[in-house]
Length: 86
Image (cartoon, rainbow, N blue to C red; front, top):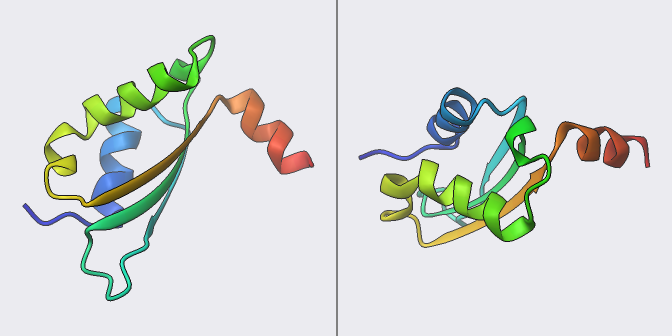
């Protein structure tokens, strides 16, 4: 399986209904084994951080078998708007 920032972005958007996704390949040689993601999703509303991360991990379960480092930030649309305003 070839994992790219674009493939992760597309899957999170399609399967989780995320309204905004940023994916950065943080591998030094961009070999797609380390990623940093920001996910803005209405489904995160009212859920604690751990539950949000589990939702993302479940969505990307197959991809995470090939990824060595995965950093995620999960926000609701309201949190995202507030963060952008600051």
